[in-house]
Length: 355
Image 1 (cartoon, rainbow, N blue to C red):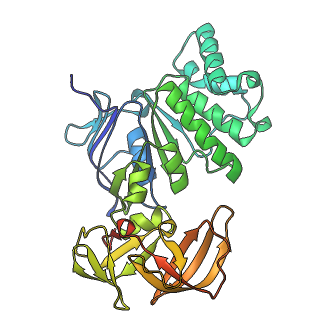
Image 2: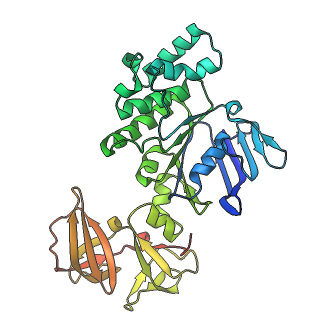
Image 3: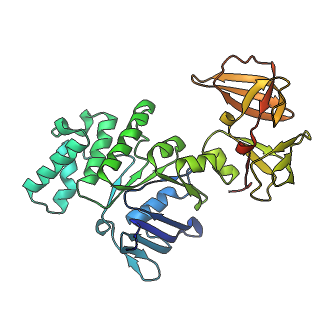
């Protein structure tokens, strides 16, 4: 039996006038998978989410939810949002202030004309699931930000949608609560076996929440993969820079596994992937060793600055004309001291220059 994706986007485009916001995006999402649409403001991620929800009509392409085609530009199909079996959690939560928690959660069931007794049972069950059992008679203004967020999630879940969409749902929370809610929300989605799509510009949020990250830039889907793969194996300068701290080294290639940096020093790299004379390495992949180290790919350097970050210390190092960031667990290297920095070949990545 052929496994049908829970959500499928085929060559989705969206233009506003002459401006193309989404450019030929293809994504297939399996049942129970959590996807993050990650990218900077203006990359098209929210517009794409709204196209999936039916709140925006794409200019071209096809969208399927399970076996059902809900949009097709060639077949003139455009199902309204209420027929797509999709829940949407907004950035603002959009809770009715004059309704209790239970009434907010039951609102969708009321619109679907579910019997009162059945609706009440469904509401109490979902409130228990999201940890709000004792708050059903409270009003939104009396709840914390995290509790309001869970009410919004419960409201989307109670109508038993096939897919739930999240438009930056944690951005209104303070940092500590946001970090806690990431894990809580992921556990809830996994426990219920839901298919979920998140929009976020926060790379750490995408790393925690998603099974797979879809990195967008300029309306295009640049790279997809697990959080680890897109972090460890970025394909472009933009991807490496957006997904975390990075050092970029302009170079010339001696051969497919050897580069020459501006000082003339020869370094080994993992392997050349394209013609761009550019490699990158993460700060935490660089080692600090004593001055005069003879390790492979060692450069003579000097510490120019340092910032203590708790578990690590971030050093700025001038090394043979390169300005490098180095993250080390050792906080005791002294500013101005001579050192060696080792750039292991397996972590020196060949990158494409553009997005």
